[in-house]
Length: 367
Image 1 (cartoon, rainbow, N blue to C red):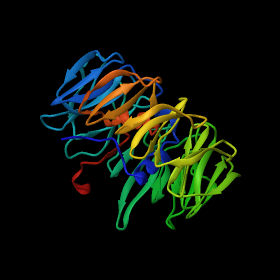
Image 2: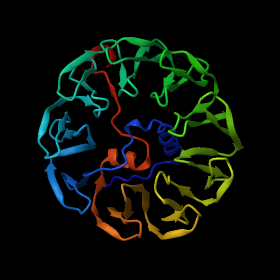
Image 3: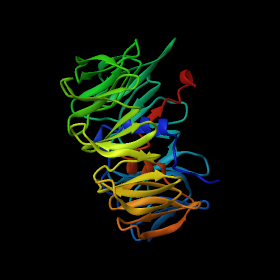
Image 4: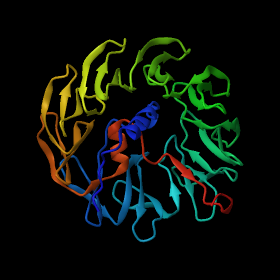
């Protein structure tokens, strides 16, 4: 089966809008989990295999451990950078380690938090879902008659913010985006105090630049500061944070704005992905992907079936039906030879954080 990392535009927008919390976004990686046939290989940047395992899914390394899923029984466990199991694959679901905690779920049990020594820290018996800790807080959901409601706990398991929200995003820059019963988004602080009133149709987490993109109404987006102050506003189809820049979609074409909202690269591309911290960004035009610089000039000609942003100096590209990695000159550092690349790498390359940040309970009451 062929796996593509090409996603629908709406899903890509969702991923990007969930990416404001950079505390678990990596900027570099020593090993890349790739798949060839039935094998998962962790390769280095020179395409040297470091170890191989019988895994159907695998993460990058966080707190010196990677999350892997066994082919035989679909159970999850953790390995070290030699490929040895640190904690056995006995979990039906698990997250990456972050802030010295990971959430794991055993068969027919509720989510438990363990530390990097494997010691049990707490169990959330009433939670139907739970997210990783960010800024000392973990979002959790409880089932209600008309759906789930989300709140937050601290690392001791104390409920700091009661589960009253329809949706939430992790804490970033001291605040979390939350969606109320009326379907409007606002922001609360770590005590649950409303900092920005719920009045938006959608809301990003705040970036390290202490800015966030919010949707005021269909077709109107605004960039706000931590106090809710409007920095600039524009009418467009989509607006997405991209490091210090903003990707913008107008009349189904993508371009970029500068931090003040001035058009930097005119919308001319059929699709696009982030610059992030790199000097080049992937863009799609007339059915093929290539790379432009921050002035909008082509630097790597359009030739790829698909392409991702540069991550730690390399960019993942699809050539035909296989995947390889290029450098900023467009030269292959790792030739196209792999059937797929781990989802966790794909999300980190997009600037969307890890693919393994939430688990669902396996307790009977939630099945």
